[in-house]
Image 1 (spheres, one colour):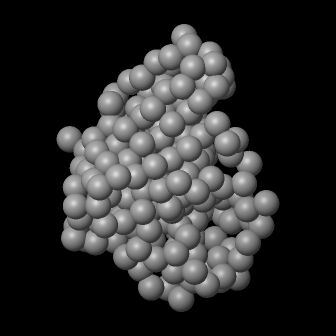
Image 2: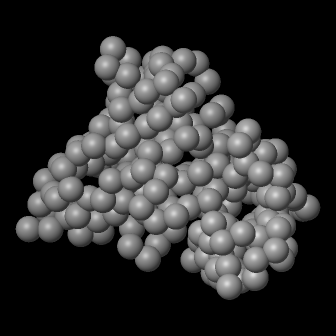
Length: 111
Length: 121
């Protein structure tokens, strides 16, 4: 079981808004920045969000991130078919011997 | 732009050593503040952080890999490396290299496309 809990799947129709959650604890999400990655099997994972809510250049503003307490969320608005992918959260937790922890990933299906 | 590419054998026999290279372009691995990282994903499992190497040669490992793993860097070739000894079927995975940004973060950008390594005789 992953340290960071994500729903295994989510779905929505084009144009809709979807929110993907990532739940952790006081030592990981509660104490450190959260990062989000988009991953299509066979391709390089892509950084979507850094430091909770900062978008790298080139990431559309349809993507937004937030954090509250020990949970974080990635919201995608104006859903497009090309958004169908796995979405993973990640965080540093220096109370752990392996300090980088990833969520199990959420498979987003665009219906 | 910055690109990373993994290379190495796709098939390794049990008990042998897995050796992978990550070739970096667009930035020098000797640039301070970047932590050259390996991550793997075994079939059906979440991503697993293996560790990082800094340009100075200093390293940090996931304890699960510390006894069998060696991370190193060659600044003259702009490459960094992963060696994992005594592999078993449990080491079958897609191995990714990535640039870690800053210490004490899970900020990786960019990543390589990954290379599938199968451990089998």
